Amino acid sequence: GYRGERARLLATILPGTLDFGSFVSCEPVSKDTFTVIRNGGTDPLVLEPGSVASPFTILRPTGQVTLQPGDTVHVHIRFAPATDGAFDQVASVPFTSGACSDTLRARVRGTRRSVEVSATPTTIDLGTLEGCEDSRDTTIVIRNTGGIAATVSLPSSTEVQFTPASMTIPPGDSVVVRVTITPTNTGAFSASPQLTVMPCNGSIILSLTATKNGVAFTT
Image (cartoon, rainbow, N blue to C red; front, side):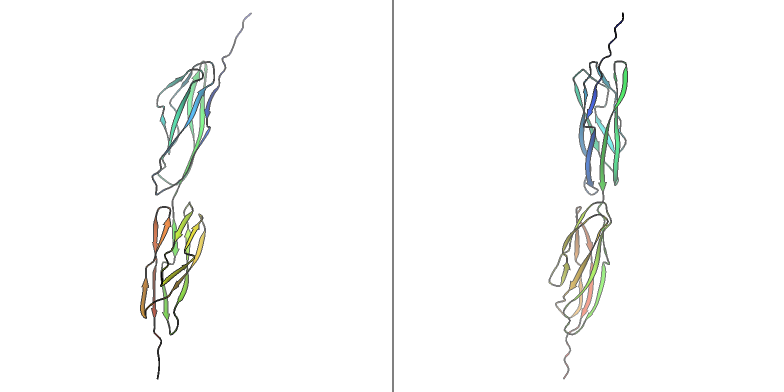
C-alpha cells in the first residue's frame, strides 16, 4: 500500500502583542522593539517581507528570510506617530513552508497625547481695597482638556498666594484655585504670575490688577 506523511508545521511569532506605551507630543516619539518568529516545524520556513500600517514600520528584515527547522529571526518594529491618537494595527508576515502558505500576525499598539491646560480667567481686576482692607481674593478654574495627566505649579509670593499651589489634574478634570492678593503699597497694584504646566514645561501667565487706597484720617 501507500503511506503518506505530512511534515509538522509550527511557525510562531512571540510575543503576539507589542505595546509601545503612551507618549507625550512634546517629546520625540520613536520607539523600537521586536518580536521573534520561530520555525518549530520540520520543513524550511520562507518568510516574505512583512507589512504594517502607519505609524508603525517594520525595520528589518526587509527581504525574504529562510529559517531552517529550529531557527529564529527577530522582527524589529518602530512606533513613530506624527499626530495624537491611540493606534492599534496588525503586523503581518507571510510565509511558505513546503506546500503550505499562511501569514503570521502580531498586534502592535501605542498612543500619543498632547498636554492642553487652560486657566479661566487669565485677566482679573480685583477692584479697590479700601481703608483697612489688606487683602482680597477671587478664584480661577484650571482645566485639563488634553489626553494626559498634567501637573500645574502656581508661584506664590508675599503679594500673591494660590491655594492649592500645586496639583495634578487628570484628563477632562478641573480644579478651582483661590487667588489672594495682599498689596504691599498703596496705589495701583499689578502682578503677572506664571503658572508652570508639566510635562512639556508649558506656561500660563495671569494678569492681576487692583488698587489699594490708604486709610483716610479726618480731624
